[in-house]
Length: 394
Image 1 (cartoon, rainbow, N blue to C red):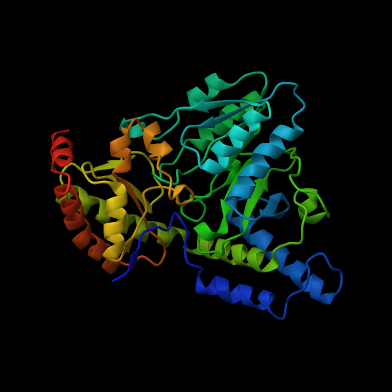
Image 2: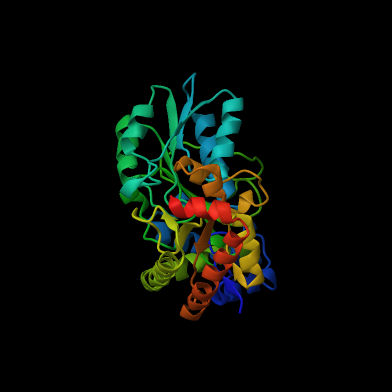
């Protein structure tokens, strides 16, 4: 049996999304920038998709900028905000558990002369993995030009206090960006309630195609473009629109809106069943961020005494696909920066797997995973008995 439990890395394209896209890969091939009939047919499809994406997050269609994915949306938000800021000195605030699309962009901003403050998260308790909004407030400076905090962490599933941070940002008059790539389609999103000025999403995280995403830009928010050419996306992103991809994210957003409540309840119950069984059947196991508010599909489980890479490979041989962290960090020899930010030791971080469920996940798949994972962990631990004994004693 093959069981896919890596939906935070990517999701399959929903059949309805593929069906909506196909005509724009064939007979409806017009350029949305053209004024003739084929072009206007493409333009109408792009406009309809923009409305669906806006509806998913509570925005206006004119506030949606289509991008090539979450990374480009994040980069446009960060570099575009810093570039347009009039202050002679510039300062950005972010957190220690952000996706590398944010952290590496911040490193590049530092090389260009922008100062960056990386705020820590709480290492334990009900706030494990969560940034204290007051830490954001304390990090503010007169020269702060942007705050960027993710909504749901891609490894832990923990939801950050975006509304509270949004209030702090508004009081300080500082633009606020939120990476919502892992929360879009999993929990309700309303940009007005969250208090964000910029918000990133990516289609392939909620059963849409790869290679397309969107950046919400609140009306009146200044943003410098990152690429130059024609006047697409209201001069915020030059280039010919990816019409099939945009149609795909539009349909995926529509489905996510329609199915959100039932998907959330069903997937959350399956996630809890998996967690409960692993905790009951495997000694010395812990769930990271377990008592914090999380998206319903994600669990980060540490198996002390069993190396994550060995577990990953062994589970794959048993037909179970999961991950040791973010897909973009695959192949890295360094342990997860997210887990290290929680205060886990390097070995504990290396013994952690992420299981993420999705719309296609079935009870039978979860039951199979429950039947296989304990024996695989026991086998891996038996190869390192000393480490296992130390882990069991902790």
